[in-house]
Image (cartoon, rainbow, N blue to C red):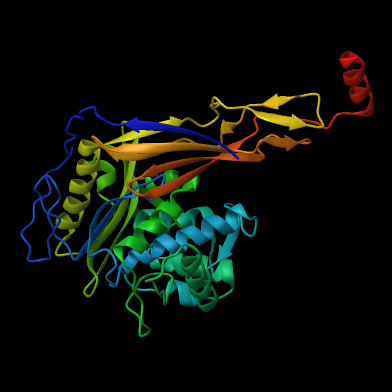
Length: 389
């Protein structure tokens, strides 16, 4: 393998990004931990990451198990979007709501049993209003039963490396069975949900009057107040029960920096939003997005191609290859490529890797072909040989 190493240092000073919108204030006795610039996160546990790589930017009691209330629906929505991507259900599919689904308490969109609702409308209910009835209706549709869906939730959690999580239902309502997660695990599933571009369309809705098949109207209001109250907030999920207290996991982006902040166990609603707001500001004030190679951009190295009229090809980045780094931090970049590849090659085929090392952690990004390269024909070989003579 050929390797090219580059050392990059982030030395530029960054302006402090201030929290816009309302000033969140709180007085609590919740556990606190100091960030490097002196302010506190008032909650049981908190976690902040770079969206793209999952790199940890801040951690407070992040592996401690705790109930997470309606943040359970982050996994519910993730599995629904996956079912749609796989063609098992569609946005326009009509679902007949069961009596079980319509009987859910807590946050609801007040579905009528035995009436038909679209998948699109039910997702809106879950993402915007944290509707328990819509969550159960979708779970029953995707997996045939809530029990089957919960099994899928736990399987997905295991696949994502959420080692300290156990789901007992699709809503986050109090359960007789044990149900818990951690700030780190919630952050992982939040980033997984936000891989689905369609999610952001629902998450950006502030309020909407929804008309049921019967003509009855229910007003859906977004439980994530930061959509309006924090500049750059792209979406998120709140939660509250007596045992979980106030929780939120949300994503925000400014100046090319995209981060995910998770708060569990705050004493009141304002405090949970304040905690997320402070972590976002910490990221935007102290980190920069170091881009090594943008999506579709060619690197400086080429690879020899065998059995083709095309003799060399230059790979491109499959996605933005970047990491968030603090001022003064160094990164090491390695381009790993084979000495040669054999035709045929299809556009999008992985032909190498970009490896970025930062603070002892390695982040890997694919390098791909930006063209189809066909295998040489017999006539091509003859012409090539004739040219050499």
